[in-house]
Image (tube, rainbow, N blue to C red; front, side):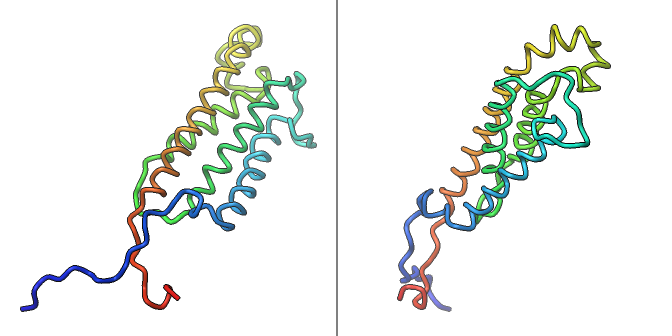
Amino acid sequence: MEAFTTPTEPFDERPTLFSLLGPRFLITAILGIALVALALGIPTDIVPNPWFVRMIPAETGNYFFWVGSSIMTGILLATYVLPRETRDRIAAASAGSGFLGLLAVGCPVCNKLVVALLGVSGAFNYFAPMQPFLGAAGLMMAGAALFVRLRGAQRACAIPVSPDSAA
């Protein structure tokens, strides 16, 4: 029987966050931001289109939460192309932040569910004042999910350096 020996190969140190964020991540993040911006902007008519009509003009807060949600969720989507050694339960927070962003950006009267539950006057009086809080909650959820995803990627195990790649 052979005795247990420790490996003699050198190990890379734990990767830094900036070393993980290469060109693949950046390209995916840019595409993710554009995709989320269109997915949120078209049905809420922030992006002008022939399919949806917004009954109330978009306010400054709608644009802020649209851009913020697009950036945070697009970067969060890009973290799924990073090397993953750990499993994080972030899918629910990702979906929740996107849904809250949609509620924050949308027209309160155009949202059929809100109008069915609260009526038109309830949508104006109760739902519209809550939209900034929904948007802030969505951004916080996306930020927390992004923090956990990037922390998990940074805490990945060290990878042994093969003699071929050392050169």
